[in-house]
Image (cartoon, rainbow, N blue to C red; front, side, top):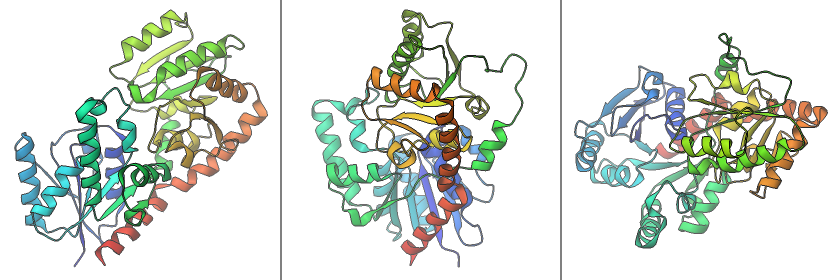
Length: 374
């Protein structure tokens, strides 16, 4: 009998955790695993990407308690050997335990938890909420059978700040479908979409939210423009768009900065870049960095838990340890101003991206899951 594995998520909205869950579950061999996915809410763009052979169930009741009860009932009904939760860890853990089916519970941790405590997008940064969040995290994470951390920095944060034993943590990166990325990047542009010009091109991509720290990138770009011409293209949408557009206007950069919003195919834009920029306050992993590297584009990124595992500074790109305007502008200028360095970094990036190729990473997941079942 094939062992049964169930991935559980709030939804399949377009985030890194959701994409990783779909790619890993799709990649597991159907002849070796009975694969299922439970969603607290059946919505999101990745629904269409899920392998039709995967058993998909969602909660019929939209209330928090109704979703919890629905997942508990599903675990009792299907008796999975392993439940892997992406987000909603407390609900997934307690429902699986309450089902008394003997399932091993795994958390897939995509970001350093402590970073949430300084993120403006979340309410638990202050007062009693912060204390409760920290205490609750210690209890919930301590009760998991295993935690998959997407980077060494995420794992260290769990151990150092939340008391999780290193013995229950496995560091596994997210898989990236390099062939898919390269094929999409080669798709033709429609009339007027082409980004190329004589000026060096910087591309950034990601949700327009506090964690991505676009104000740093825009100010660094303004600093860069004091000494060399350049263009900046930003891909993504989010609640900070109006504020960022105002910042661009205030810096008199309207003719040099383009907001393209959400793009179903961001890779054809990234492939045109001379450098890919990531200015985040924190990253637990950074799929988009690997996607840029897979296209031979050197990267400049702020140092964080995830980027250290991806970027070989001075090799495939530059890591900016000081999250300041001058430091980030200096790194951009160095790469853009040296064609030989840029070409060497692009070639190194192509090689480095292979470490995260989907077949390789999914094989590691398969091995880990079989160990749990055994």
